[in-house]
Image (spheres, rainbow over the protein chains, first blue to last red):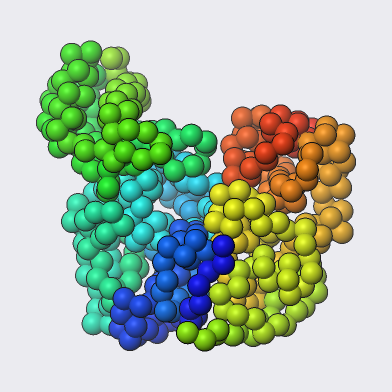
Length: 290
Length: 160
């Protein structure tokens, strides 16, 4: 279908974009890579009065290191994250997840900030940054504020970013030496929306799990920390018994949404399977034996 | 709400074009209806099928997920331009040779996406090719012949 009528403004600076957000409130939508927004426009699922195109704001692009923190500009395109040596070295979880983010042509346009701002429940980047304990930097015309990822994702496409705020940067602590990370997802076709997925990050000694964070996505309305599963996992040696205890505990963490990809029960089952595979992989990567 | 118009200027297949168009017009509608290059196809029009793939400033993108207004100042290449330069003549020959198309609707998108893979000039396994091409739907061939054609082109180029 064709998009509904709207106005279009190309923001000339971050200040200009923030001015437009102040002026138009909920009637304005930020157009970043457009790989999620444009489909909703073409299908007329969304009808903003004005699109505020931020694609020319080069100040929001790029990946750099600030001590132990990897700073990713919100407008950095997925392809740049995929090819970044900084990401490969300091954030292997993101490097492992990025090939699952849609397809080549979409990664050439889509941005990490757009993915995080959109907060699609099946998106990979929100789950990864939650697992890694990232901080989101948002800005309005009065200034910037930082939001921990734990407090940012509120629900289905719902975040703590206010209507007059622009997501400008994602700050992610580098993977600590000795830590391991694993990213796994299940989709019907490579690059399609995930049906179930997990981002795991933490420390393992031999086959003992010291401190692991498990984040689940795609089955829930937002990226979800498996608090009960984590409690059953940390401090334990990884074994069949531990796996049983962790996956049973996971039932208290997840409340999967049924959709055309499958029932709630099927998705819960898949998340349990992914939990086992993710931990088998984490132990192997840490050099231990399950 | 009245139709808001914008004047855009860009290079399409090497030619500079300036047109006044509705701001909501996406890039492939612009290319097809304003410029008459009908090689870029509209399948799903929401970013799933890949039939609308075009090259913008050197990168393959979904032409239905970008407004024409966003291509202001950009260098756009469609299958017509890509064919004329001869860049993928070998790939096109191999598509014919391997019967890698039947109805042909997906073929421009397949070629323009595969061109980006071939430009990497590195060895690609069949699995790599499948992953790279995973964003382009073909409803006729079952993909094997498409992978064959791309694999043969890549291997021949690496040997040359």
